[in-house]
Length: 87
Figure 1 (cartoon, rainbow, N blue to C red):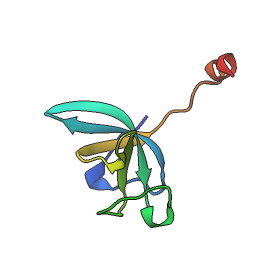
Figure 2: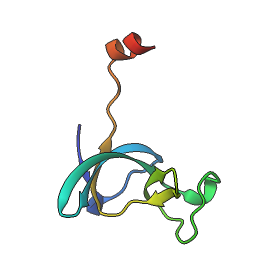
Figure 3: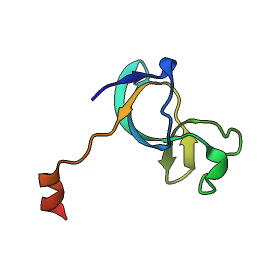
Figure 4: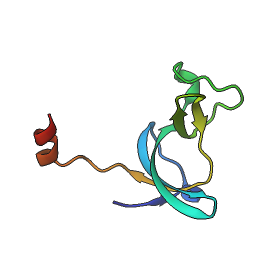
């Protein structure tokens, strides 16, 4: 998998991505949703910003923008043998 630095550009399409973000001076790898155009997605309701970025969901507050994402990469495919075992 290849990591892309956010300072060099964000993904070109919406979807789930692996991200590296800085949380209290520690690096963390998470899966986040990237939205390229929130204005077309009515399932999202943001009071303040509607801009491309990484978002996560909290059951109490709903979707929120995630800051301090420093790199992103494509999520790998689930191997076929694992998929067959659990489907």
